[in-house]
Length: 145
Image 1 (cartoon, rainbow, N blue to C red):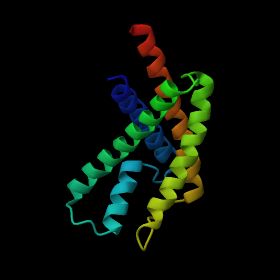
Image 2: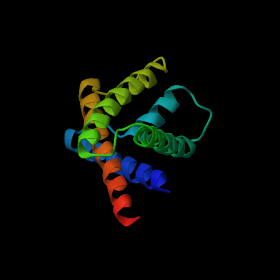
Image 3: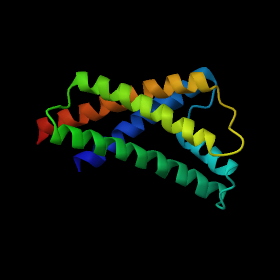
């Protein structure tokens, strides 16, 4: 249950950060929307609504994957969920996220109109928000349980 709650909250706060950055910079940084655009460019045989839903499902599933990885590390090593590890995990997750999006953007013949440098910077920062949220959930869970 802790993993699911952490995944939902961390992915949600990361997404809110991306949506705020997107509006502030007047650029497209919204991960689920970008996933939908990629699906369109790949000519996925699925309605607009289906692509939107898939974009959100993929986004939250990836968030769950990150939290599962964090949890495995926290339970099978001497690394604990601390604010320091939140920063380290955020940096590593940000780099992994950038690599992942570079691969995703390379899949279709044409890429969406994205300012890649700006997008990757906000994505990096969004992953730091993600990891700090994950640690906050784990710390709260330990306090409650």
